[in-house]
Image (cartoon, rainbow, N blue to C red; front, side, top):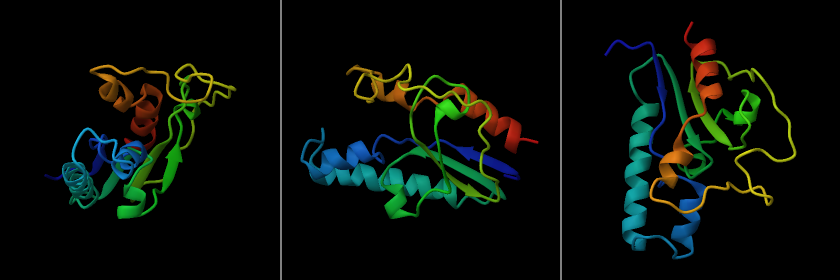
Length: 149
């Protein structure tokens, strides 16, 4: 399509470490066969982003199975490195792009999105996965400012 930069945020629900644990422990909402199928479909879509015919690519996803199924990410960032009062490991797989440089570091013992045990404090809800998947504004701005020039 003639694009010079692709920043992809493929669906992560079936690629996360948590989902892989649910499958391994038999705690998935789906049968093991269906859960693995959903993971395979998500991984195939992830790889389509990686293999897109674009010169510069960044694919973002949380820590998950793509580190094993594809390769380790080029960089793991945190929202607190980009001015956000939040902790959430975010992996970046890069093609012809430099590492993202932290733009505004906030160091705290516990971030706004965490419970006292350090886990995400969003409780069960119908839109929890959507809320957890949202890209933090500080990260998006850093991507635009550093890679969009």
